[in-house]
Amino acid sequence: MKKILFINDNSLKGGSAQVTNDTKKCFDSKGWKSYTFFGSSFYKFSPKNYIFNYNAYKKLKIYLDEIEPDIIHIHNYDNLLSPLVLLALHMYKKKKKSCKIIMTVHDYHIISPSNSLSYYKGKEKKFFKTPPSLIKLLISKLDRRSYIHGVARLIQWYLYYSFFDLRKVIDIYLCPSEFIYNLLPLKNKKIVYNPTNNLISSDNIIKENSFITISFAGRLTKDKGIYDFLESIHKYGKHSKIKIILHIFGEGELKEKILSLEKKLKEKNVYIILHGFQKKEIVQKTLSKSHYILLPSLCYENAPLSLIEGVFYKCKIITMNYGGMKEIAEKTTNSILLNNLKHDEIINMITTINQQYKSEAVFYDNNQYEKYSSEYYYKKIKNILDELN
Image 1 (cartoon, rainbow, N blue to C red):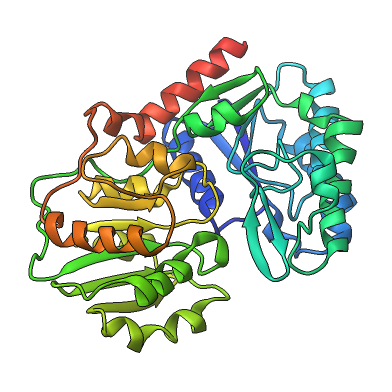
Image 2: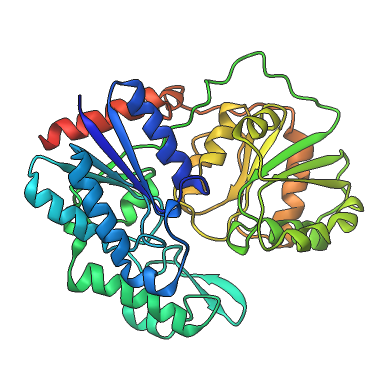
């Protein structure tokens, strides 16, 4: 029986955790013996561990010798485990030369010290248009807490990837989008879409058309853009002819600010419902009743699963005209792409959703549904592993 180890910083929170757990279930169903190594099971964030988590290195080194995996599938590790764990993988691979290591690229950490390609101007979060140079990084505040915290990001990245180049331990990078594939300046990469556990949209999904339903699922933070989106509707949006109900799933630092807009949005005939964190099944049930899935992220995003899952439930997409968001939206019918969150874009969006909300969303290419299935995902990875052997 083949053995596979999955590595990720978090076991529950975030898209990478969802993909890690879904991938484990997928490999389990195919008869593999699977193991996990989650940073959140042992550590909380600290500046020291961020740069040099020796305990994680030591713990992983012992665990690898104990379970002796044939395949190691890395997801995220830079926040809690630190890139020092790559050294443990390197040491193990020297002993077990047949071991193959693959990594799903969830963000931009592997190509930049700013893993979301962001920086701060005062308290406001801004975004680089392309991976920044070292000089641009040095003069930018990369962390909201202080310039020194941002320097820690630089030390970590240049120590492990420039000076030691520990990335060479990775055999193949799995890119969940064409966007990140084109951005990644490495040759050992393949496009492999992250799987969704949803079934292909069925004809028995019926939407309630007496009002417009929109769903958002994600962190209530600056980078996800949900507060800026709602504030723009309050500032620029005209009164919607048809009542709009916006379901918001998630928690975050902007929750109270979002709640402060509740009364003002009602004046535009927009009603928000904050659900907090909910089980996937509850989110999916709401998606099945929604006309739109929303992601107004201010950062580029890579391969946002929320948009893909929305389309599986015949939700049309409202998102930004850049990054991985644009890539997914352009594969589906009746998507609304926003260039920004300013006056004309918001006015046009409200007009459009009032006119087209009853129409359905599907992938232009019907084969795209299969490409996001667990079965297709497994076959792609299995083929890649076979090629490595």
